[in-house]
Image (cartoon, rainbow, N blue to C red; front, side, top):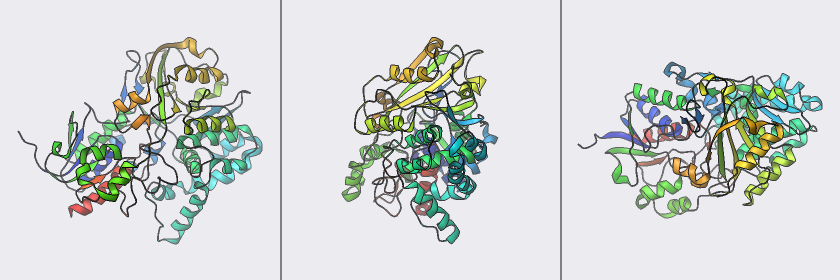
Length: 476
C-alpha cells in the first residue's frame, strides 16, 4: 500500500520536528511526522535506564526554555496531560567552604543571599527579569532588528550584554557565590567562558530562572513529547514511527519537506539536491563539545553537605568561577578535564513518581571533547562526592551514555554534541548557512528545522515553528 500524499512531511520527532508539524497542522495543511524510533521525542524522552521503577530522562531533564517558549506557551499543553513541577530553587551551586549560591524566582531573595553582591545582582537581573516576557520572542528568533523603537532599544540593551564574554560580566561581582552561579549558567554555552557570547547564555539562563523558573515534567520529560504528539494529532497530523529516512525516496509524496536533522544528516539524505555554496557551507558546519551522561538510582536522597541544596532542581558542580572556566577551557582545547563541570538534576526530590518509595534518581552529565571515548563516571562521581560526602554509598544502579551512545540514540547528537553545533560568533547567527531565511535551502521544497538553525539549542520548539512558518509561505 502506498503512502498518501501530504502538503508537508517532517523528518524527526524531537521538539522542533513536533513544533514544525503542529504549526503546519494548525494552519489547516496535511502533515506527516516521520520518526525513526518507536516513539517521538528525540532528546525529550524518559525510560527506566537503571532499575525497574526508576524513571530517568534520557537526554533533557529541566525545561526553562520549553516553559518560556513563545510557541509552546500558546498551546495549553496542560490540557494534553503535561504538568510542570517547579522546585523552590531553580539552581544551586555549592562551594568548597560550605556556602552555596541559590537562585529562586525572586530576584530580591536571590540577591540578599549574595551579601556584597546583592546590589550588583539586582541591577543586572532586575531589569532583565522584568523585560523577559517582552524580550523572549526577539531573543528566541533569528538575528533581526525590530521596527518598533521600544523593542529595538530593549533588544539592543540585551545584546550589548549578551555579546560579552562571561569573564567580563563576572567583574560586576566580588563574592564567590555570585561569580560561581554566573559561571554555571555560562557553561551551558559549551564555549570557553572568555569567549564572546558566553555571556548570552549566562544571562539568559539566569533570567529564565527568575522569569519562568526551571521546571521539570511530572512523570518524566517524555510527558512533554507525549503532550506535543497529542496536540499534533488533535489537529489532524499523522505520526509515523519506525520510519527511518536515509534518502529523499524514503519520504511519502509531499509538496515540502522539513528536516529536524543537523547539516551532516541533511547532506546524507538530500545532498544531490543541495549543491554549490550552500552544500559547501553544510560540509564545513562545525560541531561542538560532546557530553558524557550518567544516570543513577539511589536508595535515599543525595546527602548534600549544605542541606539547602535538597530544594534545588538543578545543581551545578564545579566550584568557583575560575574552576568552572578552567574545565571548560580544557574541553574546548580537546582535553578531558580532571575536575569537570557537572550539571545534575535531582527530579525525584520533587516528583515521587520517578522512583519507588525511598528511592531517588540522579541525572548528571559533563562536557567532553567531541567524540571522546574517555569514561567520565569516576570524575562525575568525585565532583558529587566533593559536595555530598557519602553519596557513593547510596548508589544502587547506574547507566552511562558516552558521546557515541548519545549519537546512536539520536543521530543529531554528532560526537555527543547536544547543541546541534557550535554556538559562537562565527556560527550562532549564521546557522546552518548565510541566508536571509535560515530555514530555507536552495531547493524550494526542502527546509531545515533543527537546533542547527536559529535560535539554536534547547527544548523550545522555536526552530521548528519558525521553519514551518517559512514552509507555509511556500505552500500558499
